[in-house]
Image (cartoon, rainbow, N blue to C red; front, side, top):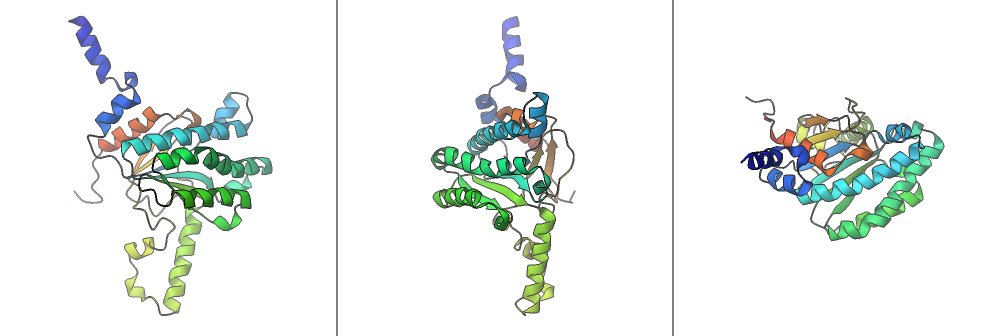
Length: 260
């Protein structure tokens, strides 16, 4: 009897359960359709191990692969990853150059698996400043997965929300000036249609790793009613079970969108 009780307690402890065991339980409830992740802590992960910062970024790339597959298996419809912000250009040149090579390495290596998983790759951000080799890799992945109907893997690359909002306002002003738009028609829905994320619904869940409690200029408009989940875990240490934990927290919250 004691062994049966201990076995039951173990089965109820999320920390002792595999991803596969927890996945089936989580899928019985509403899974967030769109998850956005601020992948933070790569540099600190490397520094804690006396490694170059670039090693942390490389390790973080492996986690993107794992979490993308996990999200797809969980039934998530869209996964937006904050890969490189408009402010990240301020980092040391050698680090920026390394970061710009990662999409090429990641997408070239992972593309066959993305296609097999029925994942569709997208990008949002200012592509005009990206190096040609980065752009080629991204465009190839977008083209070769454009007919896939599963998870949308959306990379925020050279993305900044304030820049996005300013560009949207400029586009709206231009349409008003050319009499293609009446100011009275401007509302939340119309404004959203001018944003880079216009083809996606707003995120249901935002995850930020590394213990930082800020948005860092990420999807400021789109996150108005998103549920936030913060963790001290550094991105290279983020596992499938951490994703499950975030989704379980989401499922235990009541979303009222300003109502009762």
